[in-house]
Image (cartoon, rainbow, N blue to C red):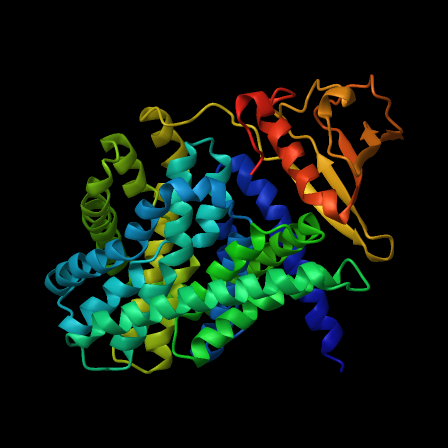
Length: 492
């Protein structure tokens, strides 16, 4: 018990330092994961002297953190944004992973003198992009939706095939013609399981009258974790099941959805911080210096050869413009995922596994600096930044079971066509009424002659039967203004 206050205090101090590092890294234009790694290294053997070298625990905690990151990413992924890029994203997250392994493996076999299985293992470890980096960086970059959607889908899905390949190669399983069938089965089963559990979770949460608002976010995240564990136990892809279930839940009309998203974002940040600090704590600066050359060679092969060729082959059938292909090639951000995957052969005590882990550390640091710092500049050079697009209107529902009514809480975002609409023009369906407006910290009961303004928070009281129609009308006016019906906007 005497050590508990010290452990809790140190953990809280590290968390606060990491939170402040986000603001610091934003000002410097550096990815925050580098600062988290630096905090871990500072706490480790080269700094405060904390000794940590358990690959089994690192792998387990890393996968747990990855599940939380994928859950947050899926819950905040808007289907309307990624649907136009579905085929491109799936191609990048599956076929491109195989191509990357097939290109990186032989290149490293020749350049580093690795045996074939080890070289292909390096290729599998380095193949997946990092979901945490993509979700946090690209959504605020002002890029075309189709391009961001492609990269989001890739980063959310490609962990699954890469994980399967790493496990097969690390365990010494015979690699033959059945391997592609195994990958297809695990991905298909993971997809099906994620859809089933996602829709089952939606059905249950919309009908459950939980006694506290805070239970809805907990239940939603729990469904995603169950999807992962069920997938692993059924020899399917648990990572894919997690992401698919989260996407289904995140795009459903759930009670207290905004609270759920905020809770998931907090968990995502906690998982990222904890994971990178843990990985920094595991790293040995002395060993990293010995792995600089292999890490730089692997980074060059990945960035200049494997990634561009895999993007070219998978995106040509969809007639993706060349400048977008260039950006997709450069935006293959690496982060914690390759390091976590590299822990698998280390835990299996595979010869040369420690060298792989150290080289991946070097590669992640180098590519994060090179790609993360230059990504925005490259987008401007390629003339890719899109004009600022209005954020989707946020509608949150809270059930009032005894009254057979629901509250719709709506925040009017910048760029929304709800701005300037008179209440008389809103024309909500019978059974729904706008009862309160909160503007600049002041709340008032609106009149029909009042106009909505950007930044307003409005409260709509609706019967259960009118709720869906009221939400559709709000979304339609948000996108097309008071003449939404005449413009063919349905709000779906």
